[in-house]
View 1 (tube, rainbow, N blue to C red):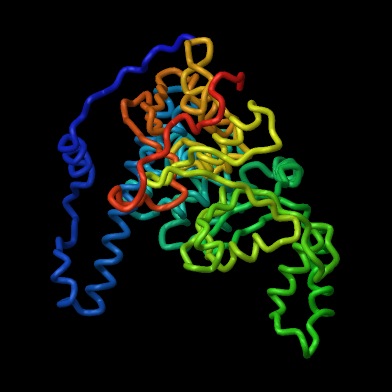
View 2 (tube, one colour):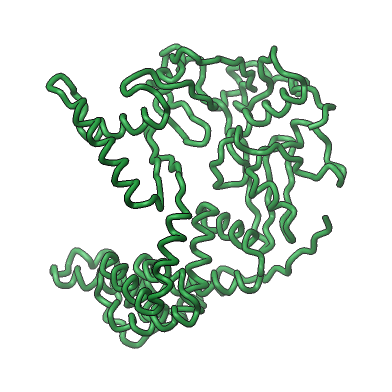
Amino acid sequence: MTTTDAPVQNITDNEVRKAVVHYLRREDRAFRLRSKHIEQLTDNGLVRVMQAAASEIARLEALQMRAAATLSRRRGNPRSTEAELSLALSVTTRQAGAMIATAEALTSRLPGTFGLMERGRLDLPRATKVTNATAWLTDEAAREADANLVLRLPGKNATEVRKAATYAAKMADPEGAERRTRERRAARCLTLIHQDSGAATLSLDHAPAEKAAAAYARVNGMAKALKTSDESRTLDQLRADVALDLLLSAEVGGTPPRMEGFLYLDLATYLGLNENPAEFAGHGPISATLARELLAGPDTVLRRIITDPLTGQVHDLGRTRYRPTAAMAEFVRVRDRECRRPGCARPAQACEIDHVTDWHHGGPTSTASLAAFCTCDHHLKDEPGWHYALAEDGTLTITTPAGLVHHSTAPPLHAPRAAGNTARPLPHTSHPPQNDAA
């Protein structure tokens, strides 16, 4: 696919700083304070400082929204713009997409709400309540709702803003309210959000209200039945356990089914000789104790992984079951752990193995030229202006259409060890076969 590089606008950090300062300059600024003066203020002064800071933050958020909307309109490629902002602002692609959608709505459909942001009277979280509540309206109806909200939003908290915006939206299009109800119920979905400390959030969104209420009542009833005098778990814990057991088709309180995934820990941690954190691909670090509990499951399969002692990078896998092609793909997935685009946490086993340099452009099929990418990021490198390069040490360099350069290196399986205390690195011939088709 032939691509054309987008023009890169060179602007120095100092020029950006001047533009922001100019944007924020205002005659009615109440006061300027250094951090060391805060302790000298009265309670009234401290609250006023917080109010002034909140106002300035709102104005900066308005500036950010205008920049995001302008970039989106200029580029005209949603996927490319989302990836650009995701990398530049260190946010997920989903967050970047939500930011762009909010920015476009505020600057085109909701001028009154955006004006409140520019005047420092409404911050982005509350403005987002308005964009969400009016997203289903036509542009004309959205502007009508926006005009009715301008005088009602200042001074309101997020909940009050959401209620006011929802009411204004329904008043702007009464007939569309029923259509919106049907659409929301049709958009039901199940999402998994990973947290720290070996926990995660499983969320069922946009479920039919009557079914959600009935499901909760069933889970709650079963949890209460288990809450005997001998039961140490809280009612909240019991509800969560019952719901998970039902979803996993296991008997309540029974043995959970087999789990598949990539769990990384060194031998000393596995043997209980240290408590170094392990890593569950797609989720992140988990405690050594939890890792050993997961590995103690009846269906656990252990695999031998050979690493370079100096770098901790994967060199080879113990394999006795797979064809060379499967072994090569498995090697890349174990090495990369997750999608290689910086900031994407899609587990490698759910990713596609792709040539960093396209096969038809001369890219070889070898573990030194393959990387794991989720479906979205797999196709991103074919978009205009995006350039990917993979170095011999496994470092992936991504150059965006805006000229920003980002690097991604597969994380080592263990901390690199001092060169004087270990043998030389393993030879590169320990890689899986290099001449098989991917």
